[in-house]
Length: 257
Image (tube, rainbow, N blue to C red; front, top):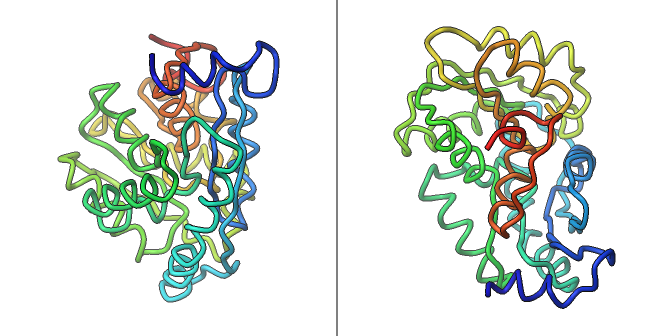
């Protein structure tokens, strides 16, 4: 029996997190992760959040890089704090840092987080890659909220894994809260701009950019996977601990076997 299964078996049914508890680390400015995860959350699953302090400004490459450096200074503390609730797995509820350095950088990030937490780790980068493999998609278009300094690392990650990145759109949000304030109408427009017969799937990065209101709708409209980062991250984490619930409302990762 797995550690997660053992831990879950020790929790009486209908108590908090009786199926699984997840520790989540996210930047202090993020308003989408907790909302999205809890909107998707199946019964018996809970998410418990630790935050990493960062500044709000991200309106150029220098300021965007500064926020990454600030996260690195506080991430160990956020992990240390959240694991005291004894979660079954750790989720990195941000994606920019998990793309830095491409595939090698993501691998090093996971190793460090596992060493600090003593837990297995789900990252945004790993989650969208697993979702692409799930669908067998190789030619992709990518949407991010980022500045160019981070977009080049996102591109490197997918290139390292052998995906053909056909198109990319970085929204260049001016501050860290702005991604969560982009309305669904604008997101639909951008997804339509990115679509084409030359791509198998559209991938979204950026954990504070919420696509849960439009992902399933746009999948049906475009007739291809629209892989929203927060949906993929929850899917990856749930499947990793053996929770295979299927339900509608959040796209084909959850609605199709």
